[in-house]
Image (cartoon, rainbow, N blue to C red; front, top):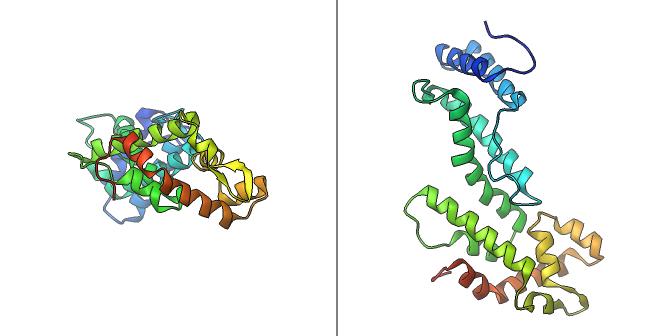
Length: 222
């Protein structure tokens, strides 16, 4: 019997996972045990936090997206777990860190950016040999561009201002956007219409397209 305590340890979670595998597919018993397992994982505090401290402003969104996808995968593919190869939570955390967190990065950043140029900068990298290297390239590109925007080594991002609002520059807006701040919040903070901010931002990204391309080492960026 698996205890019904609020928090289960790793051994209890593994036993519960093996119980799920014993129940027929689509059966009520399987569904209920799966529900208990997912709840147990979530409450256990045993889930890892890959890339902790990175992606400021959007990390929690990426993490929650990854965890949701992970749980959906477990529900559909729990039979793929092999206790002979790894403990259950080792298997779960490997999926979270090696697959689902990395897959969630472009989903969240794409939703936040809402623009084509950012997507092209980060998605149209040189062809990689596998999904793992593609994910690493994406993360590396995000870091490089984010750091470049913050440092603005040539000062050109600070010098690019909105015509009617010369006190507002591209760097200031870009830092907010790449930190996950919504257009609505930026608009309210600066007292500038969303359309004005967004149009200026997109034109500026296009203007600095080559800068970002060279930064990422991308030879052909369409």
